[in-house]
Length: 239
Image 1: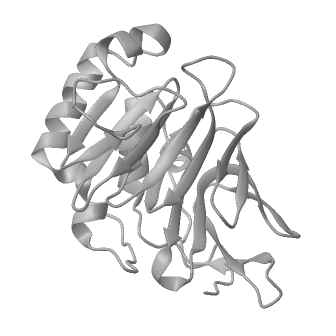
Image 2: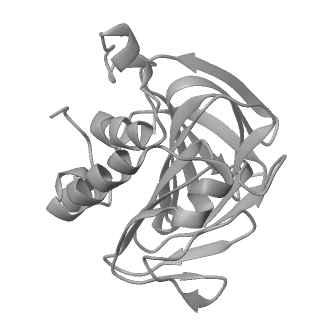
Image 3: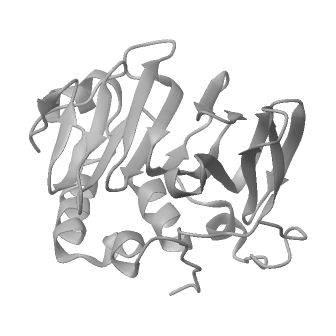
């Protein structure tokens, strides 16, 4: 188990992949094959739902399918794991997000996070973004952790766990290319404009990314290369 740093969250939220329920659900999902497109939609694309969640204001049921354009909200002590096309998502408790349509109904072009946190893994593709109230991230084939800290004035956090991500907040711009965790804060400055600063890797684990990648037939960069860097030496951390 990799070392992880928590800020405002507890172990149960980041160790979800150890739950027997998830292990059984993931095994069933893998046995059925990593299906995409209309096939995935026909069998349902929710891997696991724990607790309460809504889709477009209606209670979400485990046998339902989520589609691009849906607004997803999770309740306290709830968690939701699902895939759309070649993307997989773990939505943490007390989160609100939308997935917007790309080239087809089963392709996600944009993940709009309004509150809470989400771990996401994306297969190869272009013209896709993650947006929060204070940052925009253009992503390619990658794994990303995104969180909004309401208790800290709504500052946003994003970690490019592997791959290439173009991060912007106000006039701040960074192109992050890494095989092992490079993170940023996006804060509103005194003048009212958002700006980026370096961050440490918090509130997510390598194993989370590995389990999500497996659901869509992908592997993380460190699984492919067989080696990991240091979460503490990727950047001179701030925040």
